[in-house]
Length: 265
Image 1 (cartoon, one colour):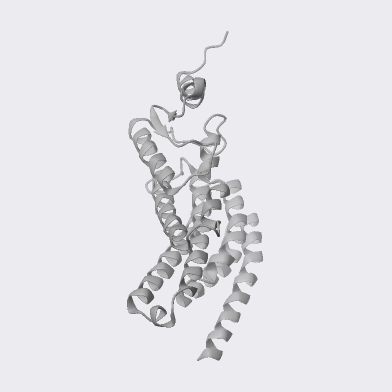
Image 2 (spheres, rainbow, N blue to C red):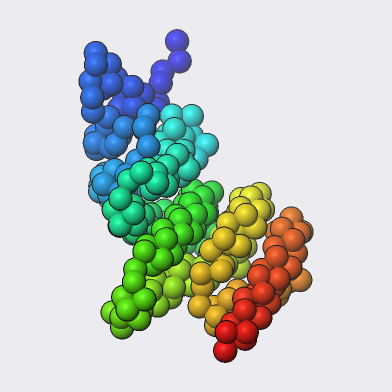
């Protein structure tokens, strides 16, 4: 009988054995993680982050992978859209949902830093880092949807409040930084596999239009210009195709928003 490698044995043990006999806790390589059978909240993401930071400090190449036979379910829960469902529950208090979306986004950004190696010539967790960026963009778009809903509940005086306006500007700037960072990944062609970048570009085509309308005007201009450039200069044809489909969508949104702003002025 072939011996099971030690790491595989540990994965089997931590993912399944500790859940037997009605056990309520789940461990990954000795670190407690949230239940992957239910949607995660911001506190669950924080618990996972702490656990994976400890794992990463003790073992190399041990973070959950998207296609891993035993770690795949953990990663899939990390980027599951089901996790957004409680934030979109219209029967829950809006301000609580907005705060939850904001905190979840912060945890996702920290997970991205854990999975992305800024010193590597080839990303060790390329597919996972790109998947987390896509998920973070989705979360950012949801956060802005909730922010706009909350803004509409404020009185006219509150909407003119300098503190409220500053908070909204800061939120827009943060979204702008995340969006431009998402495009930075596309320019790191040597660090990511072609198939991973092709999938990522296709996901950006679905996610960016919803977030684009909330960005500051200068950032929208930058995003449109960079996508136009990448449409012609990116080395991978599949990426160029996805961006070529995205560019006119964003350009039309930009022109429409400029017309509306001009009519108001």
